[in-house]
Image (tube, rainbow, N blue to C red; front, side, top):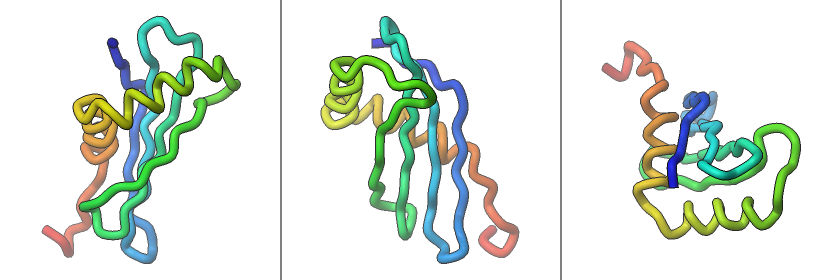
Length: 93
C-alpha cells in the first residue's frame, strides 16, 4: 500500500517530552490521516490516529489502524518523517 507523507513535525515541549505529528494519505483512501506521536524520553512512543480534516470511511480508518499495528515499516516511516523535522537545541549537540 503506497503511503504519501503530506507534512510532519516534531517538537520538544516544556517538560522535555516529545510531541509530533505526521499527516499522510494512503493509496485508494479518500481521506488523509494524521498520526500524533508522544514520548517522554524519545525512545518509546505512544500514538493516536485520526482523520486530518473531514471524517472519512470508518472501514478505511480501521484498515489504517490495523496497518500501523502490524506493519513496523509503515509505522516507522511515519515516525521517522516527524523525527527528521526536529531541530536539536544547541545545548544538546
